[in-house]
Length: 139
Image (tube, rainbow, N blue to C red):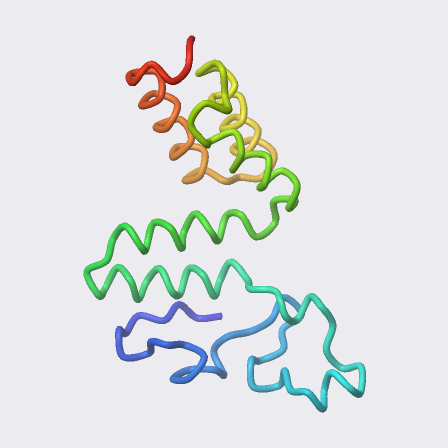
């Protein structure tokens, strides 16, 4: 998908549906109930793609919402991370769940090296430092 670079394209599903493609390359407007009934649509076609999330990030950044854009960029990194690892990481980030800063740093390393989730790894490392500073974890 070409990156969307206009704030006017939001929401993408209404203003530029032909530019949103499924993981198997189907345009959003091809994902109809009829296509599902005829077996032309799989679960892969219903999952969001990193490209769609990055397009949303572009729009958010242009609209002056950098924190939202960062969230979309991290979300794009999570698309290919297994659900159980995402949920375990979420639990680990809840205050009091991780006992040491090293637990969080190790999770960041895993996400960076195994899944190329660079922004997410940075986010977790920042959380580890904040938790350490606030006395929520030991080293």
